[in-house]
Length: 244
Image 1 (cartoon, rainbow, N blue to C red):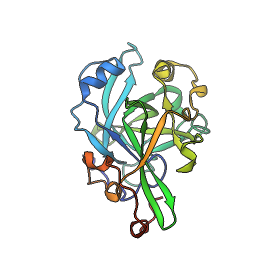
Image 2: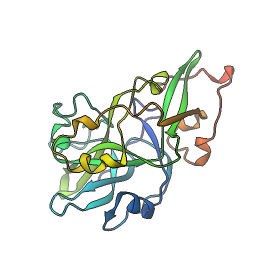
Image 3: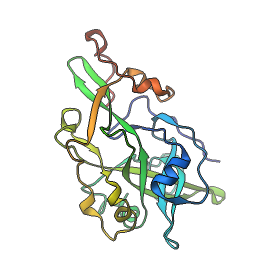
């Protein structure tokens, strides 16, 4: 049986942590999914190697399903369980051509529900975590791709990655990249379109709000609503390990 890998203490790249606290029945209504609902607890600190809900389109029926997949894409052609590269992000600029991602982009795109995400902003004494969420308070959907990998004993492991693009003007003050955030009117095109390359663009500059949070989010085992509480860095706190 496959064992979960230990998540890194700090997110290695953008986008490396996010928040998913929507109840399963609310996601079913929002994304119009059918079938069984995943039994996943809300998470204020979704980290690589963890399972999270993902919306996928059934290739035969066209129905949308909400399923738990592990974050960190493992291509179906990967030879072994251990030591396999499992990227958590795919760059919009190369997702259609990179050998790691192109088959999933062509055939297995998905929506990744989220209510916020984190990024680390460079401060004079180090990096400080920032929470980022829609100004409207509504949930969002990241563009994602997924894969299905068959291991020993015909065990099937389903994984996903989040597509990232260049940052918009607002995001650029924190990081030079951001997840592709799909507008609700673009969800069907991302799941069903032949080549939705035009959707992989930065979000509108006025979509998101930003606020500093505490360094507890740096550690994946910390998980609770307090992680989203505003916590402005004091001069003595701004140092420490670099998460990027």
